[in-house]
Image 1: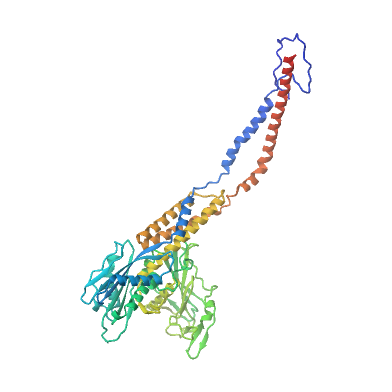
Image 2 (image 1 turned 180 degrees about the vertical axis):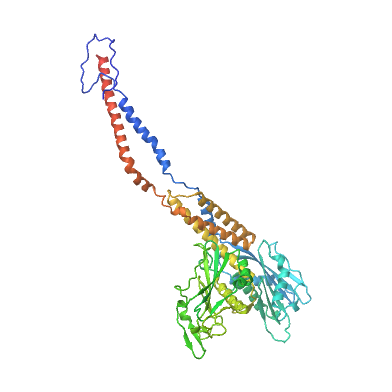
Length: 604
């Protein structure tokens, strides 16, 4: 290619002596810029295209509040949640004594029974003590918390605590202390009544109501102040705080609640052999009469839905044997792992339950005519009273034997389980449901100090049991929320090319907001509201972590991006850069030759 260069001025004076010209080191014409301009233009056009290329492979990432996530995790780990609980002990029919001393003794007993380190979900309690003598004169010491309401002296009468009046006593105590459980915590009361028994016996009766009250009735209790103080402390800690459980807390991962805060109760009626008999049930009545109060009571903890079905040709997997002494077929506790026939029992038919909801199966098994009646024999050789069993985190099974084990005619008619039998079946189901939540099915609590009768609730759970579930479930939900958000935060920061949609960012923000709301409700003493908010926080955190876009195939690392695009652009870019450098070097060499020629010429 012929270069464009500036020729020497022909009008210049050439009369002088021309200098010696060396073509290897000199040139008499100025080097042109055409080749350098073309090469650098191609290079700069390539460089200008790099931002457009980078924009085309850019990954959208919604900003996440990493600092707020770390702050929530540190706060939950360093400062366990403690709920406000107000304890009030009332001694009726006792001689006047120093209430401050009695309060100090009860408080020492509570401190001895509680765990030395504060656990999440425990009570930050305040204690009040009232002593009402026989003349209905009172001396009391109130807690330092100004929001604690005082007891109206003389409201509780000793003659109210009679035999067979437990339900009415519970309601009357609830009327007395109903205004004391407000937004600053729950009020739990224990009333100790010193009265003479009609039969003259020195018997002590202890009852825990279905509200938040308990009472101890006996004669000669003024001589056993120490025992009464110990029992009052035990009721406050072992019953009201720990809900009658031996351990101090429920392991949240074993609570039958899905990570989305939902529970599906699936009730199935299984006719083992419909050729012998066919049974149906009025499940709508069961749902409206028995199950609706339970689902309403547990609404702050879980969103519970109920479904039912009737299945046929559903034999069990285990074998039964005839017992001549009992005159029935029996299956033993060792056969329970093989009782459920997963091949024939098509129980998982819920279309409304998502993958993270918890489904609890409750099965009524009607045996065939060839093994009727069928009873469960316990390990001690006795026959089970409920004739049922539970499988943790799965549900429960009840074996229901028809009243008459004689087979129907060749064409069996459709029978319906009677209302009385349905009521008994539901009672067993509610007991199994309580066991799945970690409670005892029997209405009694026994300790080293004595036995306490527990009044059953028509909702399946007493109010102090619901308070315990709310406290523990709030702690587990918040801990699970912080763990899930922390895992998501570390994952997102470790993969800078991961897609983070706006929906994920909004779910994380709403989850943090719900978690802070739950903590605020805890400080205000709102048990139900804190459980509901913590459930939402955990559900939103799980939704964000398991969002489908997170596992999309569109995200990859920078190394992967370089490996994909380098075969297309690196060879071309390399040649362009080398050509530009080479042309720049050539231009500098040619310009140096020209400058040398000009210098030689001026010298000459």
